[in-house]
Image (cartoon, rainbow, N blue to C red; front, side):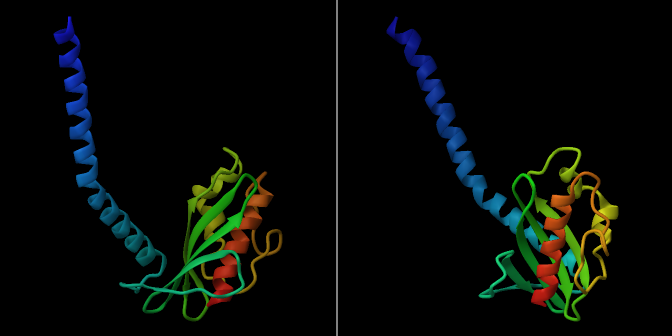
Length: 164
């Protein structure tokens, strides 16, 4: 009777050990892949820049989380409050203050409304090549049914442009 329990317990322990070892061995690869993806995204948002250095941000704008300096501008990571939670974005801004690209990295907005900010290219494209104060209802058409989300994204872009 004791032998019948010992074999399954030993195989479960051995399987757990193998999975733990594989997870530990692959964690470095996952971190490196994340770094490469982030660099590629920043190069896409700020065309012409190949490398980036992190600059310490000590300003008063609470929307700015980090600043990455490229050869011809900056990629600014912002976090603004949306309708259902924080919205994290990366915004590329050239040295002359024009938005060169932007991407929503994370949001928890309402499906079918604010969550459309992830995929609505017409909405996001309104910000490209702007360099002044964008305002929902004036220079930016809001996402249908998602005014709070639209204003949060607009604040994020305005913060990035104001930094540069």
